[in-house]
Length: 305
Image 1 (cartoon, rainbow, N blue to C red):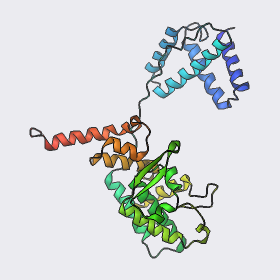
Image 2 (cartoon, rainbow, N blue to C red):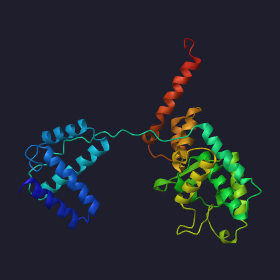
Image 3 (tube, rainbow, N blue to C red):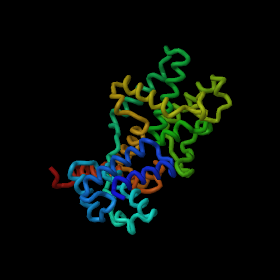
Image 4 (cartoon, rainbow, N blue to C red):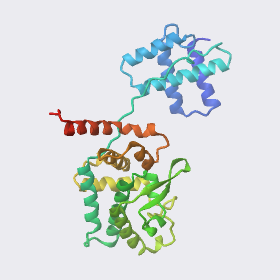
């Protein structure tokens, strides 16, 4: 059985036994056929050195690390199948390392742009000329933006907040995040004020009276959807003179973390506030710490220019 026939057998197995989607099968086919063409003698009989040389070649051709990793994953699955079926006595991919994926820096906002965004939300929330529904929406958006920037919550955590968070009016509250883990989150005075204003407006809507959520909505979940908040946030950014393409709830979460670090916060403390289980996740912000150290030396070292 040649390489082409074994690739077909692998794809049939993926379809019949694992229910792989058509797009997945097409992706496997492209990757495996490309590897078979790129390896002398075909893929099925390749040794570890042949596969390593192929991976080096596609790296030299400019394929991104993510594409390299995807191709290697397809090749690994293929050889696991051959080994399990007794068509190969070994798995040549066992000693191969996955390409290192460069971790992109998170998109964030400057402190000035964040201030403009929040100021715009506050002005709209205080506009006495708005109609009832528009004022309700403005008060909700102001509360969402203030709380998000004050806490760095994940958007799913934010929109699903229980109403008791605002009713208690505490400087801290507990939030249940990923992995069902709880963490303590501090609230700024401005965020608490915005939440109180929204809570007062919310109390005037009979449909919201029995909702356990701070931001109720007529949705399957019972609370505001992430998509609606993201859309409203982009609209607010545009009205504040900020390119809406640069804004999302996740960007504001990153701004929260970046601005804390820029102003002297400890990386471990930011990890706890963001709810990262591992410090390595928070280390995407080390560039902020590096910039802060450079600024510290330039500003305070006696021999700095």
